Image (cartoon, rainbow over all chains, first blue to last red; front, side, top):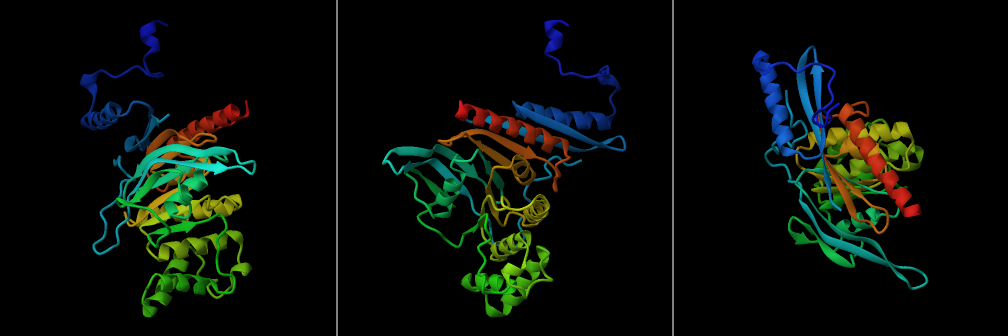
Length: 65
Length: 274
C-alpha cells in the first residue's frame, strides 16, 4: 500500500464514476459533502432503507482542553 | 431524507420560552478538614442555547454536581459566573427546576397532591391544577397510582412523579443531577424514553442540562455532550450529536459516540490513578 492509499477512506467496493451517478445519488452525496466541509473530527452515518438513504446523521467532536 | 432531525421545531404560539444558559470561567475551591484549599473544578466556559439538551459527563469528583448547584443557585462559585437569559444567577428561582437522584417527594402527600402543590407554588389557578396534574401523571404513565403515597411506589415510579412535578410547572430550564443514577436498568430506560419524548415534544419550551456518569444516557438524551476531566474538573471534549430521535443504544452513531466517550473517561480514570 502506498502513502497515497493509506490516506484514503477504507472501502470494499470500487468507486463509481461521477458520470454514472443518478440525480438521487448526487443529492445524497451533496448533503454528505456539505457535512464534510463543516466538520473536522467526527462521524457521519447514512441510514439506508429499501435501497434509499432515509437519514444522514452526524456527530462532531471538539477538543476543548 | 432529513438531516437535522433533532433541531428544535418552531415554538407554539403562546408557549413559554426556554432560557439560555451561559457559564463563564466558572471555578470552585473546596476546603478540606485540614484547611487545605483544593480546586473542585475550574475554567468552565460554555453556552446552552434555548431549548437545547446538554449532558455533562465526567468521572466521580469532576464537579458535575457542584456545577449544576451553581447554575441552580444553590452554591456559590469561587470564580466566574452563570447567566440565565443574560442575567447573573444569584440564588434559586422558579425558572430552574431541579431533579435529584432521590425524587424528594413530600411523603405525606399523595402522588397527585405532590404535583398540585408544585402547581400551587407556581401560581397556577386552582381550577387548572387538577387537570394539569392528571395530564402530566398520564404522560409519565403513573395515572393509575395518583392517590397512592410515594412510599407505595417503586423507585422508578417515584422518579417519574418527580419528573412530572418538574415539567408540569413548565420550567424554562430543567436541571438533572444524575436523576436516574439510583434506578435499576429497566426503570432507567423507561425514564430515558420519557425524557426523550418530552425533549421532542416540548419544542423549545425547556432547556435541559443533565449531569450523568453514564455515557449511554448522555448520548441518548443530548444534542451536545460535554465531557469533564477528573478532579479538578475541566472541559475536555464536546460532542455535537445530530441524530434522529427517539434514539436507541443500537443506533450506529449512538454506539460509536458512546464508545469514544467511554474511552475518554477510562483514560481520565487511569490518568488520575497513576
